Length: 178
Image 1: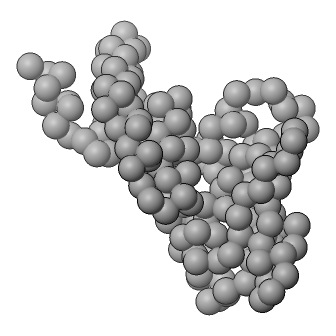
Image 2 (image 1 turned 120 degrees about the horizontal axis):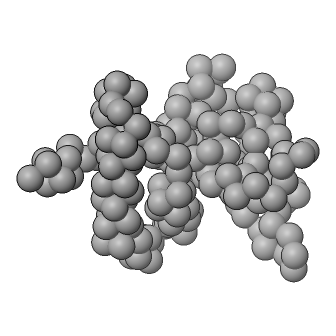
């Protein structure tokens, strides 16, 4: 059965199939996309609650956001964790920095992550995979990316919930900065 063979190609199924899919007829491409979307849903249903078992809160956040992004990401998109590793590698290639302001400078000045001006309500502005790929998203999405990247770099940057707002806070020695 073709669907069983395709399921066994995981974990990077869509990335492996993407170069070949362009050569397929539109109807065949649609069937392939539907099949892989069904596989995504099956994986999501099996693994969605895994983040509840993760003790580290920031690792659990990355797991939960990764599954939510994966479910609605464009066909052939990489996993959130892959994109975060790429960002982490680019950050380190600029020098071995260990300060939160340097990370924020890297994301918002050098990498030019920004908020959308004309398409604020577009759902893709909340999908972290798409936000990283386009370097554009809602402020909460950008903050989540910064917090998740900081966790990977062991920097003291945290999400901070306020009524109606989500902010980032970092610890500098014995004080906190917003």
